[in-house]
Amino acid sequence: MPKKKEILLETGTNEIEILEFTIDGKHYGINVAKIFELIQYQEVIPMPNSNVFVKGVFKRREQVLTLINLPAYLGHLERPDQENDIFIVTNFNKSLAAFHIHTVEEIHRISWDKIEKPDLAIYGDSQGLATGIARIDERLVTIVDFEKIMTDISPQQGIQISSLDKLGARTRSDKPILIAEDSTMLERLIIECLTKAEYTNIITTTNGKEAWEKLQEFKNLGGPIEDHVRLVITDLEMPQMDGHHLIKLIRGDAHISHLPVVIFSSLISPEMRRKGEDVGATAQISKPEIAGLVKLIDDHIF
Image (cartoon, rainbow, N blue to C red; front, side, top):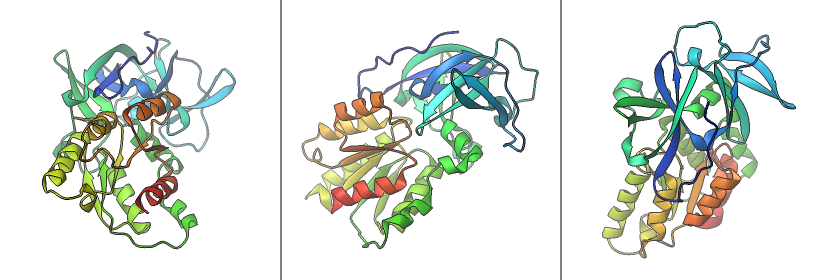
């Protein structure tokens, strides 16, 4: 079983490291940045009245972790657990969880522009369970949407629109905000939250490449860029172009380099925060903290 490698990617190169794993011979992938560690299969204690996809809990050192039955969630037939099965312990949205898989293959370094967004005609409007499809050595590897899985199983870990209530009375603003977010579900939630926060002029794009093209389109219209965009909000993990590379391009364009850019991602770890600072992010905040995002928008727009 390969151990997690140190992430040696230069910041802003539009590359990603993917751990390829299998379930019933089907190939899947996860961003290495989401992995806390890989551990061998161990005994799990079932929990009564838990979610149907929660296998139970186990103890890792002094910490008790929940184990998600990923094969069942992805629609695979049940088979007896085996001693050489693997648990992927993930760390995103400021919480740890474990996912049961069958085998670990290897880590691949590829460019985001080699990763295609799943076809909505196949996966439906909610994008199904994949954030992207990568072709690696002539086989297709499905990059699993672990954030969506955790939100489905534990909704309280997702964006809570009700958290905006504590912000009190708001002043309506039509200042244009550009969003780069590849998840249809999260895009809808962010729009709903910003609308509730009285931001009414929201421009959406599905990845960094689309956001960059939109910014260039606005720049070519002439005049101050603020007439078209006052602030950019970007995710990090996106097919075609990630958030770090988008920010690097923005900071390299004299006409738009001064625009505030906020990273809104589940991957705000100390290492990823450093990478965001390296490319010139104005601010960075973890995805569930929608009220904090609104406060950052307020600070930089007003």
